[in-house]
Length: 326
Image (tube, rainbow, N blue to C red; front, side, top):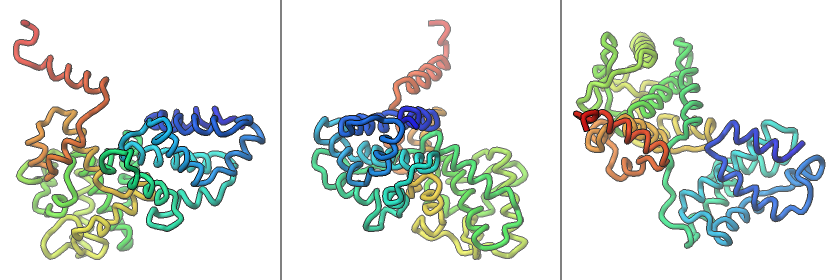
């Protein structure tokens, strides 16, 4: 067993996390004076605990000042947690105390993220507040795959199955259109045109992808035939026909997110969707009207990757009138 092989395999599967896991590796190498392969590696990985990872975060924040914002520090903590979860799944290395702490809900006293966030929130060297980042491409793929799985079987046998199906539709619409949870709750079945395949949101007729349109038709058929439709004709309901409540947890989405990608905020999904609209060239004002998102939320979705920005900007510039006459 070789640490570099584990790192390479992890980065191959999760390329977005390379910089953070390499920053952790730097700290690991400084504080481990032995081989990173064979039995010494096993001893090391079996002995790493939450305190060691916390100290690696402190090193990156205080000693070398690599992370200067609370959001970046939280991302580091999240990535390192995912890295050890990957080790748990792909190797035979046992470290139950650490693995359990990482898997615990962050509200539990001895959870990994509770320890990390306690430091991050109190650290004066870290600027700003902890903001929810948009889904990564890989997280989006995983959520989309899960959502489609919930909609494959149209004979939703119980309240839990229907709740998952509704959550799946909601997740897909957030990812595709950037619609906020608040605006999703307002959508009624009368806003869905199954014949032409579009749905009206805040006065905009939004074209549905064929698969999503069919899935909505199947859910509609099930809801109407089994008489679990809400009295107000609202589309998004729980497994018993009650409309989604004001708190996102009533939809079940935060719980499903926590299990799938170890985050619980629907804001990350909405930000991903808004980011796609920005890439498509929609203006902030139009996005605000469609999604119900605030200016601050939309600003938090602006692209930061230079290469991606260059490509998008230049693709738009060549569409300018008389471009090829200049």
